[in-house]
Image (cartoon, rainbow over all chains, first blue to last red; front, side, top):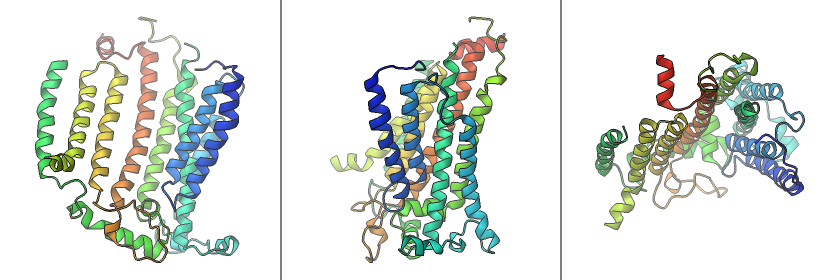
Length: 152
Length: 100
Length: 123
């Protein structure tokens, strides 16, 4: 599992053909989470699966990991932070915790050129937070559950 | 152990199948669980949130507090795995004197 | 007879999965197999809730048509789907932490077999 596979076919198929497609599909599932089946949890699982696939084929001894555990931990905290922020900003505006109707996101309607309610915008912000958190935690789980068997 | 467990679990299976006779049919439109909350959730999604996916609307808005706790659970699981498996915290030679 | 089977089938599958999962958790000696049994038990619960959300003639809980008045009878109950999404994610977290503990146990005792673990702990 941990030594590098030198097959050029495996490397090309996984790293050039498969993993970018999986990442794009994960982002699609995230941004279409409010119009079709999908959402933050599913997109996080898909993108984490893509990264795990890349790590399975290249092996962890193959150079430094591009995304280290320290960065992933910061990312996970940032995901939770986005969620909590989406809850605290309405609190400061004087309404309930997580009441997205009070989020100051009306300017985005002018930028995007179509009307969406504040609550839909709040849902999207929260889904992005969930996505970042779940993705980083799943990759952390994979990294630390597999790296222990390198020196046995 | 195997036969004892099987002998304990087979009556449980029989009990569960017997009890299932009192549950509503599969796909029953008038099942009690489907009558109360579901119309309100559909109505809230269509009137106030205005996104098509009812599941996402309920997950992130109506039950947003619950989902915040769930994300915290996932984060805590990541932290717990890190704490249990941190490299420096491993006692190298203690405890594995028996077989290995 | 066929209708009776079709109406009860999800409950029977749930019962079978519960019993299989409990058997794995109790009778198997390997801790990894106990963990797999726990996951099977969890999928039994998920199957039960999703089967309970079904409605004859209903569609997925997504409002497709613009402007049309949504009637609750047209959609399956969305609440069990939300709850089971939560349950799946929490199940992944539980499995991860359990696997971390198993890795540590394997390092500490050199085995994942229940009997020899108990023997080593008693000594």
